[in-house]
Length: 204
Image (cartoon, rainbow, N blue to C red):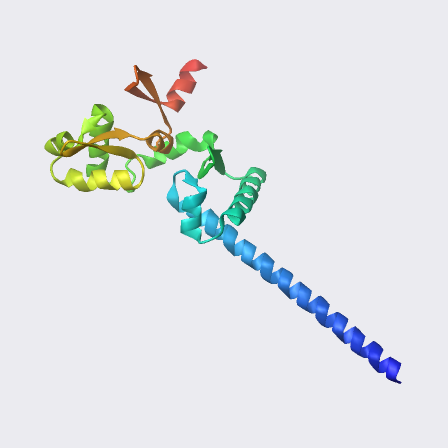
């Protein structure tokens, strides 16, 4: 009789252990999915290359886990029949449209509300005159250019460095990647900006 009771208790303990183990696994899986979504959202919202440190700050996930999650996201988007991909460059990651859909996106982006018409005009002047002093841009575009320039610097499209009482402005590499453009340089100075799609068509 005692043996039967012990056997029954042992079975109850075993069932409890299995149930507890399954619950832990479910919680771990749920947490991983939540973390994947956080990293995915950070890449989606940023629209630029992010390094590990930036992703940690945005998601509050530890660096080692971030790397594992990034590998899973890259694998996920490589496998899926998606127009989106995750690009890896110099230990930085960016979510972007696959190259075959770039021309379509560029057409949709014409007149995009992402930048106001005034901001687009200010950015065009910077692109045309770079490297250029902020004071020159303000003379051309007016005081509203201060806000535009600050915005472009904040989102990484323009790089600035102190020069006397003003700033010297130039386009960043992110600018060319963002607008899917390539730059030509002569003696270290950018002399023209060309659309990749136009170049690829001309070379065919």
